[in-house]
Each structure stands twice: as structure tokens, then as C-alpha cells.
Length: 260
Ligand code: CO8
Image 1 (cartoon, rainbow, N blue to C red):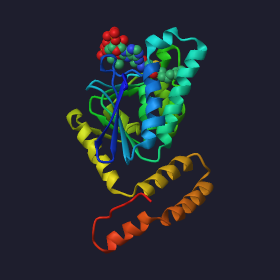
Image 2 (image 1 turned 90 degrees about the horizontal axis):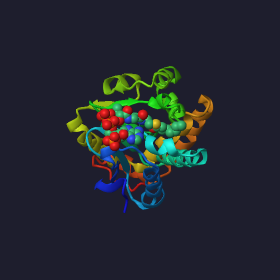
Image 3 (image 1 turned 90 degrees about the vertical axis):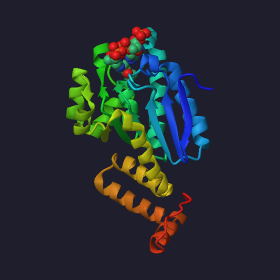
Image 4 (image 1 turned 180 degrees about the horizontal axis):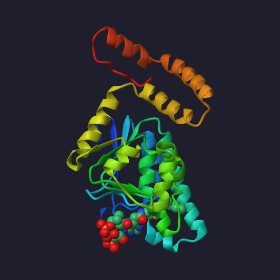
């Protein structure tokens, strides 16, 4: 059905979206971003998954960015369309109720790094290299990278990355908070699946509330955010999952959450 991406349920409750253009380091061409849009807006809406993993095909690249060959030939309106679609995709990943985990299995550059940053959690293989080489091409990161990444690692470090266009290796990315964990390449998918499985055992309702509160709270003034957290906490309390979770604890058994 798709030529540039693949999607499958890999374990119960866990979806895997793979950018599938290994020969060109999983670069996100216009066709690729359109396929991602279609997947998010149609299939993913209907899927009953509790976590989504995003990765790239092969062992060399997560995503080496936007497609330079295509961008070189684009008119301004075409470039705007390309950016609008990508912005929409990354916004939707950020806003999904379920956790989205990036398995960063190699180069994550430009738009590829922006894709990783739009995910909730980033686990990188030890051969990963991340960065924003856009200024070497006469553009700058505008698929959310200059804004989301600034909130993630701070404007100072981001400016250094963007202005120099230099990549950082996985260890440095971990040190500056650009990724959350680094594992050996051969262990990457096991590590990511294991995290997804742990997530799936918990209340998807409570996780959805937590994600929403963390995301929207980071845009608010602290006192307003704390008020919103309290209100959403009370909303979440009023749920079947809360009754089940607390009952299971007291009855010394595993909880069986319905997500309601
Ligand atoms: N676009 C198009 N093709 C690419 C890209 C790319 N971004 N990256 C790699 N490829 C292609 C290569 O052209 C090559 O194809 P071919 O075999 O047909 O020549 C194939 O992938 C393999 O790449 P290399 O031979 O270059 O592999 P190396 O191992 O020698 O190098 C690198 C790997 C270092 C990752 C190198 O390929 C590289 O530097 N790639 C470009 C990375 C880059 O600059 N990415 C940022 C692109 S710009 C972007 O993402 C902007 C997003 C925001 C858009 C809005 C901005 C305003």
C-alpha cells in the first residue's frame, strides 16, 4: 500500500512506523511525507495501539533529512506545501494521545532530527549521529526543529548545533538531552520494544492525560500550568482505570486496564 514507509503492529498494542528508503538513508521525500500524513490521518486513527515506535530502515540511518534533490527543484509554493505537510505530521505525532518513541538507528539529520524531536522519547543506537546541517544548504530547520529542539535542549546549545551545522554523536546527544538513552545498535529494537511493553501495561488513559499535561504545560506560565495539572488530575481520577489500578494494588494482583 505504501512505497516509502511501512507500518505494522509488532506486538500487542505496539505499532511500528518505518521510513523505508534505506538506499537514500531514509530521506523524507515529498511522497514520503504524504504517505506519513495518510498513515497518521487514516490508519492510525483506527488502530487500537498504546504506543507507536518510529524508526528508519537498515542500520545506517534513522532519517538523513528532507530530500535535497527534490528541494533543489522546488518552487517557493511547492516548498511551502512540503513544509506544511511535514509540520502537520510532526504536530500530529506530538499530539497523539499515546507515547511515540523514536528508535534513532543511525543518522538523524535535519528533518530527520526534527522527526525524532517531535517524538516523546528518543532511544539512540551507539552509531547514531544527530544534527542540523541545513545552513550548509542555505536553509535552516523549519519543520519544527528551531522551536521544539530549543525547548528540549535550550536555545544556546541548539544555536551552536544549527549555526555550525556539525553533527553530534550518540554520547554527546545524550549529554545535551537530545536523546534520552543510548544502547548498542544490536540491542536498540529490543530496548525500544521493552520500553513500549512496559508502557502498554499501564493505564493508557492516565498516560494520555500525562502527555497532554506535560506538552501543554510547557507552553504555560507555571501557576496556570499547575492549576491545569490539578484539574486534569481530577478528571483522570474519575475513571474506570483509576478504580482498577487501585483495586489491583490492594488485591495484590496485576491491573487489567481498559483505558476508560
Ligand atoms: N537528500 C537527498 N539524498 C540524500 C540525502 C538527502 N538529505 N542524504 C543522503 N542522500 C543520498 C545520497 O545522495 C546518496 O545517494 P546516491 O547513492 O544516489 O548518491 C545516498 O543517500 C547515500 O548517501 P551518501 O553516499 O552521501 O552516504 P555517506 O555515508 O557518504 O554520507 C551522510 C552520509 C553524512 C548522512 C550524507 O549522506 C549527508 O550528509 N547527507 C545529507 C544530510 C543533510 O544535509 N540533511 C539535511 C537535509 S535538509 C533538511 O532536512 C531540511 C528539513 C527542514 C526543511 C525545511 C527547511 C527550510
